[in-house]
Structures are given as structure tokens and as C-alpha cells.
Amino acid sequence: MNQTPNSDHPDIVLCPGGPMLLRGDHVIEDEDGNEHQTTRPVTAVCRCGKSQIKPWCDGTHKFLRKRSAD
Amino acid sequence: MLSPASRGPLSHAVLHALRSGETSGLLDAPEPETTEDAQLALWIMYEQHHGGFDDISDDLEWDPHVLGVRRRLEQDFEQTLRARAPQAPEPGDFAETFFDFVAEHDGPSLAAHVHRSATKTQVREFLRHKSIYHLKESDHTTWVVPRLSGPVKAAVMELQYDEYGAGNPHRLHATMFADGLDASGLESAYGAYINEAPVEVLEQNNAMSMFGLNRRLRAASLGFLAAFETTSSVPSRRIAQGLERLGFPAEMIEYYTEHVEADAVHEQLAVRTICGVLIEEEPALYDDVYFGAWTSMDLEDRYANRMLEAWAA
Ligand code: FES
Ligand SMILES: [Fe+2]
Ligand SMILES: [Fe+2]
Image (cartoon, rainbow over all chains, first blue to last red; front, side):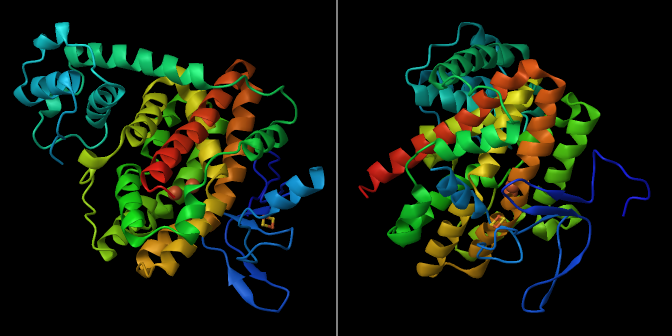
């Protein structure tokens, strides 16, 4: 974790209409209580609830976005 | 790899010059007979900067006669690509505008065909074509890194580190694709299938190399990257499901499922921390980001159209 706040490189980024980006190593507990270890330098955690590979994002949120814009 | 077979008078002349080392004859090189002839000649010259050829001297990488031909072909190719691209959208919130631009693009879907109806023979051909890029995946973007400001450079490396397996050679995307080819009984040596690569595959490869090798085109390169990542997660899932349907080995499926997850991250990084920051720093590069993005989608459409027609799907 960063020692000093660094606004250009936050640990967590909430992408509008999309996932939460997590930098670094984390363990995520999903809705069913299962734990998932992050494996990559930056991880996208699904926030729309529709991903088929939860807790990770798989890009499905883009279809929700499109539909709500119509 | 060995240099490929020629496909017309220009690629023949380039190959002859490179294999023999007698390059001065290229001063009056013949005109390309077809786009395919020109694209193959260009591909060969770019390949000198990637892995090179076993039957061509490394000393010719920066040979001025070769570079003269390359420059002419590059100028024609860039002009062709620019003429195909539409106007960039009105600037607004960059990420939102960019994601909309990609979402509104309606192209033929090869992934949908692979998912539902492609035969095993068709998918094996698809994998052979894709091997030309995937076995050197991401390398063209690495060429851009030294030409960027600190913030954009760090952002590109954050993405590239993942493409390159975050330090684990087995997770390097190009290696994962090679493992998938091996497990599928296909050749995983780089360039093994170049002689059957259609002109659309050569154009995709050459656009990436041209954008990567020319500092002037750095924004087009990063725009290409952003559109490529943004159009990857969902198609990768469909391809993975198609491979499963057809009984392809786990290693090949794994390459695509890895891209479902990885590219959902990469699209956010490429759009927000890479292209978004680049055009904040250098607003004049805005149009080139979209030129690169369009080129990425358009060249994939051209490849998809060709294959869907060939397979009469
Ligand atoms: S946020 Fe991307 S799929 Fe849910
Ligand atoms: Fe990749
Ligand atoms: Fe990627």
C-alpha cells in the first residue's frame, strides 16, 4: 500500500458505470462468503452484478450501459 | 524463422535483396502488383525489427535501401488507413466518449461464429491466422514506451506487465497462445503459418508495427491498443465457449478465458490511465487516438468479413 496519498495513482479506482479497479494483492470475500485472491497487478471487481466470472468484471456492464442509454 | 514465399514482384525483389544482401537493386524496386504484394513486403521489413529471419542477415535491419522501400510503402499504407477512418467524435468526457464510440461500432462477429457454428477445421484456420500476432502479442506497444511522458509511460507498463505475465513466463500471453497451439497439434514456432496469412492479417500486423515504430504515430498506437482491449473480453468469452463446444484442449481455452478477465482490466487502463491522460497532456493527439482506434476495429472487421465469406457462414 502507498504510504502517502497519491491522487494520480490511487489503490482503488471506481470506474463510472463499470468495475472497481484494485491495485495490488487483495483477498475478496464474495456474497456467498467465498474468498478470492487477486492474481494480477490490477484487478477489475464487478460492480454491476452481471459478470459471469464474479467477483471479477468481464465487460458485461457495457451492455447494461447501452440499454439504459436507449 | 525462415523468410516467407513472395506474393508478387515487389515482395520478390525485397526478399531477393535481403536474402542475398545485395540491396542496392532496391533503388529501382518494382511497383507492388497487388495490395497483398505490398503488405507482404512491408511485413517482411517490419519483421526484421521483431524476431528477424534465419536466412537474412541481421546487419540489414537498418539498411538504407531497404528503409527507402519501407518508407514508401508506409506512406501509402498510412494514407489508405487514414482515408478509411471517420472523423473523431466531438470531445467530451474522454472515457465515456471512447466507450460509446466503440460500442456504436457495428461489425461482423467472427467470435459469434466460432461460438455457435464454426467447424473444427475453420477454428484451426482461425488460430493459425491469429498466431501471426498472438505469438508476438503486445510487443508493438512496448516500442511506444520510450516516446511517452512519465505518467503515460508508467500506465502503459502497468498494462504491459500483465500482458507479459507479471514476471511469470508461463503467464506471458504470447506463451499461453503457443501452449494452446502445441496442445491443439498446431505449430507454435513464430511465423510458421505466414504463407497462409491473408492480406487482412498482414494489414493488421503492419498497422501495429507501423504505429509502434514511428514516434509520430504514438497516439494512434495507444488508440489502437485501447480499442483492441475494449473489444476483447466479450468476444474472448464467446471464442472460449466455441473452443469448448468443439473439444479443443484446456490450454487453448485458457488463453481466451484469461483474456476475458485480463482485458476487462486492460480496457479500463488503456482508456482511462493511458489514452485519457495522453490527450490531457497533448490535446493535439486527440484525432490520432481515434484514428488508431478505428483502424483496430476496421481491420478486424475486414478479416472477419473475409473469413465469414470464405466459410460461407
Ligand atoms: S462491472 Fe464489469 S461486468 Fe460487472
Ligand atoms: Fe493479451
Ligand atoms: Fe490485454
